Length: 84
Length: 420
Figure (cartoon, rainbow over the protein chains, first blue to last red):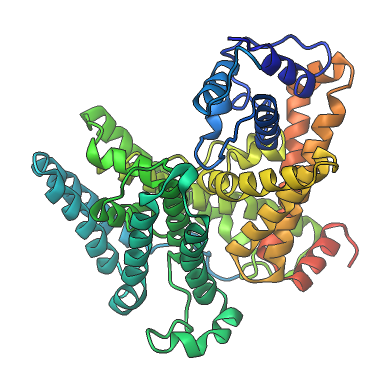
């Protein structure tokens, strides 16, 4: 499972330059690192990167709270994390 | 100065009746543990009985409006449940959502009611007064319909649906629960130990104290239209009365929510939290995750996310910040209108939307600030205190719009800065 594109997006888009990358299980939304619009941007990124459609009414926002949880949503929606 | 206002009010004696009803309900649920179907119908019937008992709703409104509306929403939910997920009918969902929202608009906004007189006269005269609790019923109905349609909630049952919609501790002013979560509590009620029972009781006491002692203590000084005579107030008095209103609305509303959470716990329903020290938050985004949380989350999940996602897809060349700002302003302007039909509520919502946009823009800008800035703002008491004070005063300015019509709000602002 290649999580690098997701980690890279978070680093590039959400963290301040030079800040350390949070662990794959570190909360992003519930600790204020990412806000609800940030989650929407993340969803758009995931849809384009993995060719999937994420219906926001079917998912709780906390399903995008960590890198591992994000990866789970991508897999559930049919995205291929190994060959993105 | 006139008597203290009751913002999220029930007559205090009603809460005593609520508490008695909660205890009776808790015992009936214990006795009916082995018969889930009977238990859920008893639960739903108890909600109706209590609402009639405390006159939160009258028979005419119940039979002429609320029950028909609930039955229609339930049947639409059953229809939506047949085609969930990607195969769902968006047209049916749109029509379904339009039903409770139309009823809300017709009953809540007097001018809009006038437009519909000819249509509504056959059923029940909706014009004289808004139906108490209907704003919350409409929000719960929308979340029910969307959750059923998306497949997040499984096949609904009428008994648990009625129990959810009419649940008496939250009927008037929330917190706004979700059907799926509520139903899990009905089907597998969390055990209530003596310790938890005492904690729930203590929560009710705290809520009652906040409403009847703390809110009442500051109410005579609050800058709401019924307490301070504006023409006679000095600048200092106006500032004091603005602070008083901020704490009046917080203690009154959070006290109400405490009572609802405690009462819910007694009858085996884990009512979601509605407040988490909102005035201590460091920015407006944090504030809206701590103030009237269940409304904020409802707005986020059912309005902001779909609107924002649609805009991101359509406005691909527009900077994300502009898309975010538009989504915030649309969401909060509508939230303002939900609070009341005056222009001041619309402007209050737009003001909050712009505040959230500014907060987002500031966050983007400061990402590139030197590490010293972030250390000061996030790791020192002085930095955190500064952010909290600025946020609190931004909210204070919002309360001026929230509690006064535009003409009066303008005079209040002029008075606050000594320009009268």
